[in-house]
Image (cartoon, rainbow, N blue to C red; front, top):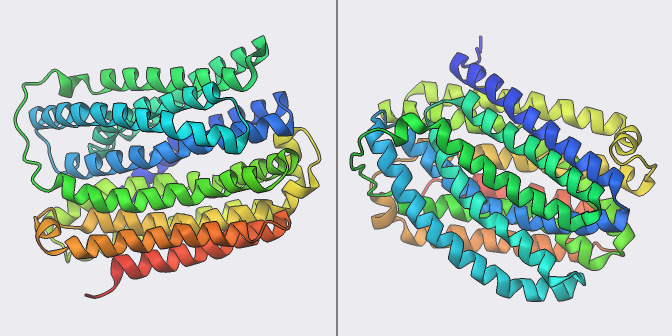
Length: 420
């Protein structure tokens, strides 16, 4: 009889509670903004948030690799070394990316017909998005799930308070962006206190021989994943009227609950599977951890999709305070697409957890990395083509998103698990 992995279940429960409080607070945030803003303003906000999601590709990549390495290191002095080295490099990377973003924002301002300064301020999220994952990755790797969840919850709470206050004061979308940047910055500051026992320890050098090579594959997939669930809102903003784009943005944000709400399962699996990989790459417990994760993920996704299918009008009305028939018609479809994407995410985390830290990536798999990168570039281009050519109405557009998600999942499985 199949039994769930106890350690995974315990870790998943803690993270599911913490992450879903975080997600619930984000839902409250979106709920408040949808109520305070017109569909056109909310559409602009959703487009700006696609920038935040894209910055998340760096965040997830950094947090994942830090989690993997810190899960196998018990010496606090070496973890301090990991934090300091990653901090220096990511700070430089943040500055470079922000400068490049300011240049690219000129194009976005013209395409979206939005004020340049608004987009430029949004770009400031790059700094906390790239720095916070270092401390959060250490917490996740050391299975300090309660501390990690507390940090996320504090960020969401501060964000709700500041953005609501600034919008009520009349700053509208500007207020939301400013409040978001401040909340994310404060969350990073808080996270350093949560690992103060590590930062106060005597520093010891930590061997990171393959950390940057391993980061390549993680970054490639995370980039593709983040672009995938951000591109739909960006394209909708460009091809539909502001009002219709606003309707789609509401359904898209709600649909992403299927992805974000179940992501803690993959995050809890990563440090647990990584530790077991250290013992034996062929240990049967690894497959047991994966199967447990797969089962818990499936149950969570089914629960979300059933609610979306049975009560779309009610959910849209509760969320926006309006009867938006166009949004309710596509809610299940956007949720289904994100549910499919959640399986791709689980495959990635398991692949990362079970991969060796030897130098084989640098020595033997350079061509393989190139092929993987090109494949995911093709997937994103394919999604763009499908969505752009499905712009006749929102149902066709969301059907195109589902098709793209299916191809993404199949491609992820083939490229990560095919026999060479």
